[in-house]
Image 1 (spheres, rainbow, N blue to C red):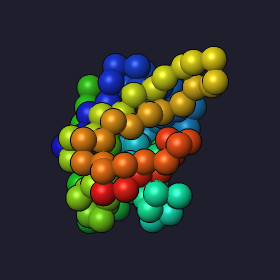
Image 2 (image 1 turned 30 degrees about the vertical axis):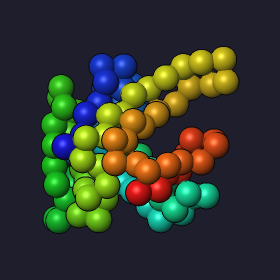
Image 3 (image 1 turned 180 degrees about the vertical axis):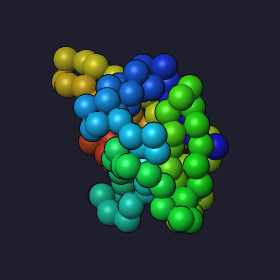
Image 4 (image 1 turned 90 degrees about the vertical axis):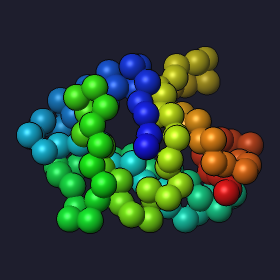
Length: 108
């Protein structure tokens, strides 16, 4: 479904450790209405999945995705990038029909 790059996996593992790693702790990846193009991504470290979540594992990182978000995340690659402008997670979404100039929202 979705994939984390090795750099993103390392960063998520750091966040999970800082969070106080529990056995069920994982990364929630969500698509939320909003942003200037219609949808935006959300990432959060959570103690466990919700009952209706799809649960994936990528190189030891548990990933939680709710049913609404799952329809927009097929084939998405999440990376962690560092540049002169700062650092953060970036999304490569083959399903996206467009995005905004700031790169924080997309349209399908």
